[in-house]
Image (cartoon, rainbow, N blue to C red; front, side, top):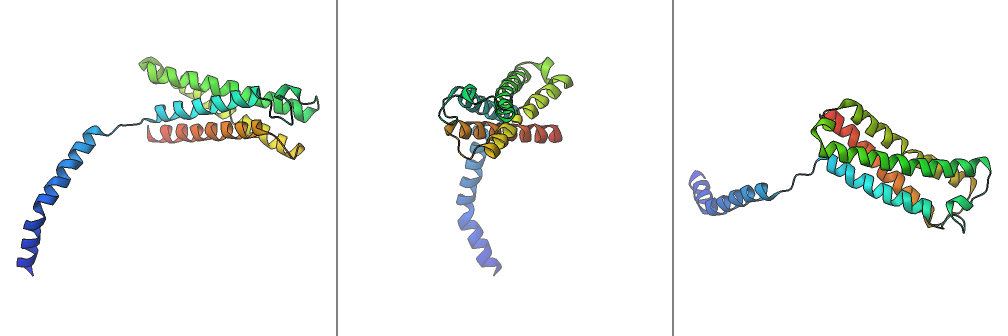
Length: 165
């Protein structure tokens, strides 16, 4: 049995050397993605979807500001606009965190970025209120849902980033 194992080891040695050398080459060529970069991407997608939701005419046949003046519709308007605004603020702060060492080491900037991303979750409140009061919505509601999903994903990245740091 040991002679058989030695022969197998000798026969497989070139293959193992090849796999080991290619693994070393792959590790040099791999790209490292930081949590900051992941947050920037998800916040950018959230901002694009949020601006698209606020500016398109897919809200029951009209734009967001063509909704009525009932209290729930006013809250939907405010939550949508504030969610997109806070997403933009969180994105700006995240870019500053990536670009500057001073901002990266500043705890208040990180807290503001986290708070902006948390406030962007108000998009989800707008979706819930719109869905409760209106059974049908257009594609703008789906853009708003995408924006909320990306904002909540970025919030998850912040939590993981702070727990790992």
